[in-house]
Length: 420
Ligand SMILES: Cc1cc2nc3c(=O)[nH]c(=O)nc-3n(C[C@H](O)[C@H](O)[C@H](O)COP(=O)(O)OP(=O)(O)OC[C@H]3O[C@@H](n4cnc5c(N)ncnc54)[C@H](O)[C@@H]3O)c2cc1C
Image (cartoon, rainbow, N blue to C red):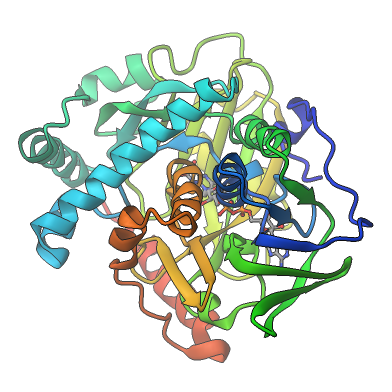
């Protein structure tokens, strides 16, 4: 298990399926036991479909058990970008999907009785005046064109009261966004998946997927499985099994630390925050009053030797008052990004589908997009059809050069963060 604060503190109350069972024929096989895969399995199982998750390690091994827990509104681009590039109608449909994703998240918490410490109120913090002006304009745009009335301005003078830092030029609080404990959420969904009779095979890695006699065969270290339909839900952890997905979804690494329990309230009125930097800092207050802080990214598979200090340096730029606070946990994880920072939702080959590349917005999207994949198989295609229209070209450079190209491009943008 990864050494995260989540894995150390969240109790797992379910047992998964014994991979030695004889019958490995299913209607649907879901590759990947994160929030996308588990949510897809839940929707399918609830509708009586004979399905199974196969997970290379343990449920929650991937980004869903390691992330910053921030539930953000919308996408990595603002709505004006969508209107300009994709037209008003598609922009509106996409906004509606992201709002529906929030409702879905809250509804699964109550429907399946999952206590995942959800709390609303997320601050977007401007790292320079230009970005504060931008956030205010964006707020006006969302209010007037999308009737989104959940945003409040915090000016620079008020930042120390609300955020306990004067590192920012102002912020917008989004009361429709928030934070959640993603591992509690995932374990709750997985438990419900099993309750509805679906199977979960852990320590079962899909090595290859091929068509055999009108069915799809999935070769794993625990034998061959067959299915009529397959969902690839491996996001940044897929690692070499489907070149079509991996040409569009590349892994980057992000890193997180968690402080010891604080004896003061660092975010008195809000659940969490993120800033406007390209290499974003993101943080939330845990239910036991620690600061869980993410900051710093890597675009190559090589991780920093000392993750704790790599992230702590960013933490102290915002919270120098935490200089003497102990860091109890430090970890990293991979997440899928796409070249346009838009999710990749598609039928990649006949009867083989994926939803991935949420580009940092996966806590909101993965539970809903997994459900959208399932609904597509159940014949409800509307949201899938909208998401399929998103432009997600292959990364440049092909198999050989895409990592160096990505590193060069990302490094350039991260330099811009240092400019005033
Ligand atoms: C450090 C970090 C911080 C983040 N913070 C945020 C945040 O604050 N807000 C936000 O919105 N998003 C955040 N994200 C992104 C978010 O966590 C992801 O977008 C989301 O969890 C993706 O979920 P998933 O189920 O699609 O994939 P994952 O949770 O990554 O799960 C994929 C699973 O597939 C399995 N798998 C892969 N290949 C195979 C195979 N061949 N056979 C079997 N199993 C396989 C893996 O073992 C893994 O368990 C963060 C990500 C990281 C890494």
